[in-house]
Length: 98
Image (cartoon, rainbow, N blue to C red; front, side):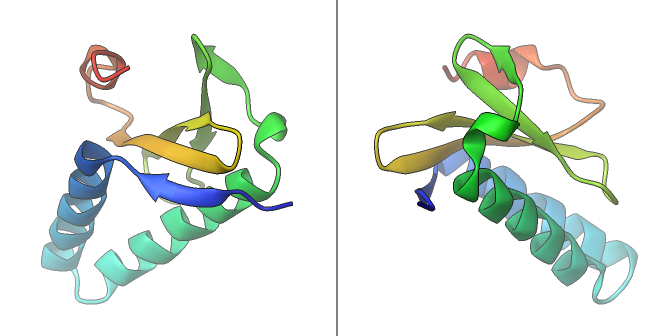
């Protein structure tokens, strides 16, 4: 069973901001980023237990091409995305959201 995907407000903003920045670097790169992150989130929603717990009950999936991780929490019927986070940012930022 695939879980319903819910983005927290901060995660959605991070995701959209990163896509815009990538598009500013090269036309179409932002869309490629959106597709890759979307695929990672979909895989996590289909089998969340495959991903390691990294903080409390929060799990992480790592993008293959871009230096981003998606941090999420599993609820009874949904996967809640807490952060779409660049690997060089301080993790304390997303951890404060928990």
